[in-house]
Image (cartoon, rainbow, N blue to C red; front, side):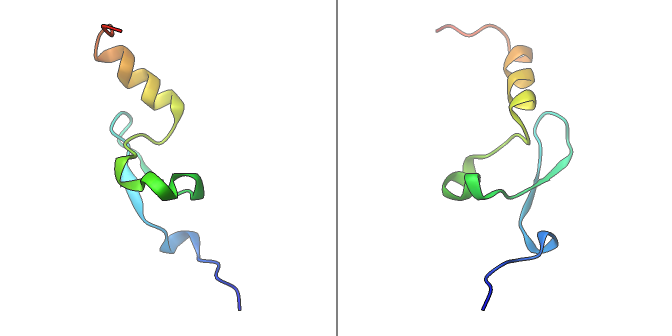
Length: 55
């Protein structure tokens, strides 16, 4: 038996930067609760808008 799921059955979230919905990905399985952005681009854009880092 196959364990595949339909894409429509996967959990979704709203991106904190672009406000678009995005779907669960296997690479996010371990830390899905911590995922806030749909892509690296959105994550980087959010970092730019928050101001310079103190690192």
